[in-house]
Length: 213
Ligand code: ITT
Image 1 (cartoon, rainbow, N blue to C red):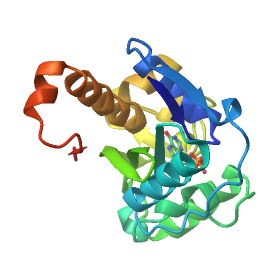
Image 2 (cartoon, helix red, strand yellow):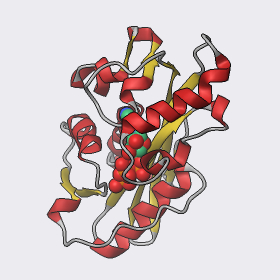
Image 3 (cartoon, rainbow, N blue to C red):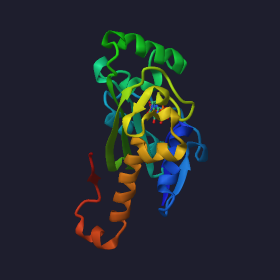
């Protein structure tokens, strides 16, 4: 199957490609199809934005499309930066400035490290039909200071207690192992493995399948 991963973020592709490597899927990216303008991400939830992107690119490309929306959620900040993670404080603001602002807003919490989650919603669409959706999250805390130069985005300030380091300090293999995104795509891979099976296919009344963690 040809599958277009509709993202402009190369880091997302780097985490996802190995997860799908053993499936009979030819993974395309936006570089492999005619360029279109990005849709505006107007959703209020990760689900809504993942759907919006998947349906937009499916209509624009005619391909089967998987899209994802993700971000850092800090409950102590009312969920910010949340769905605005990519454009928190402005689209082109450096992450160092964003980190400083997050630390400033978290100052009233003192030494206590506030909880945080990385959340991913993914959506698979063909034409106007949604075939699969999933949402996954990993939990951690905000680090006391940025650490690590690996990964991207908010990785340097997301401390992951099970590995005792920020996700910015993880190797790519470790990041793929723990990543919220890789978890969502592993769910997709499991679903894809099951629905491709003819036996299960006969048993399934609808090809539509929703899986929410
Ligand atoms: P596309 O919409 O084209 O996929 P994008 O980067 O704009 O690319 P999102 O709208 O989903 O994607 O925003 C995701 C942002 O959330 C991302 O740019 C980072 O700032 C942050 N983010 C998501 N996953 C992350 C991760 O694993 N590590 C660090 N930051 C992450």
